Image (cartoon, rainbow, N blue to C red; front, side):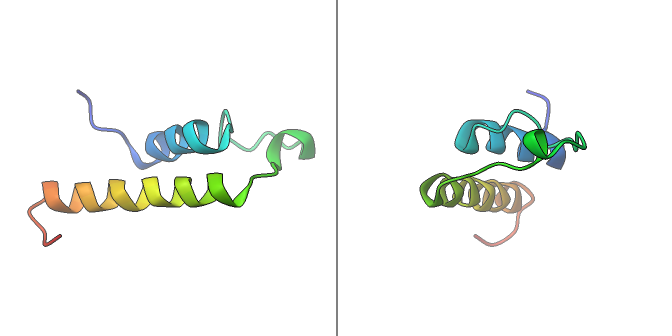
Length: 63
């Protein structure tokens, strides 16, 4: 499996946890600003943290 770039990872997390289709700026408030609940935000942050931990372990760093 191809390793994800940071932008691909961020977009995948936003889609999965926040129902945000893209993180590309589209210069329209209705498309660029989103209401997110604290539960979804926490899950997204947790997923990002876990991805960082997994990358660190894959590179041979301490957990």
